[in-house]
Amino acid sequence: MRRPHLTRVLALAAASAMFAVGCTTDNPQPTVTATVSSPSETPQAESVSPSAEAPLLDDGPVADGEQSTSAAADAAPFVADREPDTAEASVGAFLSPVNLRFGVHDGFDRVVIDLVGEGTPGWLGEYVEDPTQQAAGEPVYLLGEDYLLILVRGVVYPTEDGAQPFEGPRRITPATAGVIEEVRYGSVFEGQVEIWIGLTSDEPFRVFGLTDPTRVVIDVQHP
Image: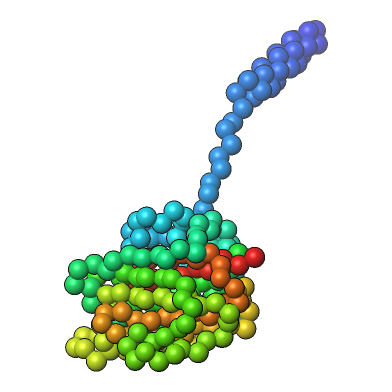
């Protein structure tokens, strides 16, 4: 006497299951994809060089000859040429160079000059045939076949009141690099500090500024 009732219950259960399957097929749940950026690899919102055409990344201190492990920096597009690269310092800039760093990335070598103080730096980057000190006029002897001169502007003499001492290396000869053979920290003269870079060949380069902390970055392309 109870079997017809059981049959109706089973039929209703099967119909409910088919309805649930149909709802799931007609209305699939959306897939959410999140992109996570590491704060240390994200460029600052404010850049000293607003005309830069590529993402400006810096992976922090890199020891002489140490291979960069920054995937974000290594993937940065490289927009550069061999023409002089220049920018003006802010009016009244009072900056002290405090460190010089080097890093090698996939596709480019990077030199970073850290600065502290007030204002934003300017720069002039260009290839020169005969490296010569801007103040004394003496020759600068560098490893390499081609030479980049970087003048970082808006800096003060280390003897001025409020200036901070330079505590970085004055010469870097990377054990591993693409084209850079030597980097030298030069003299401060008339609001500029010299950075000399000796290379195995003249390659496209770019110079740009970053803030928080303040620094000037030189990237030189390599195969």
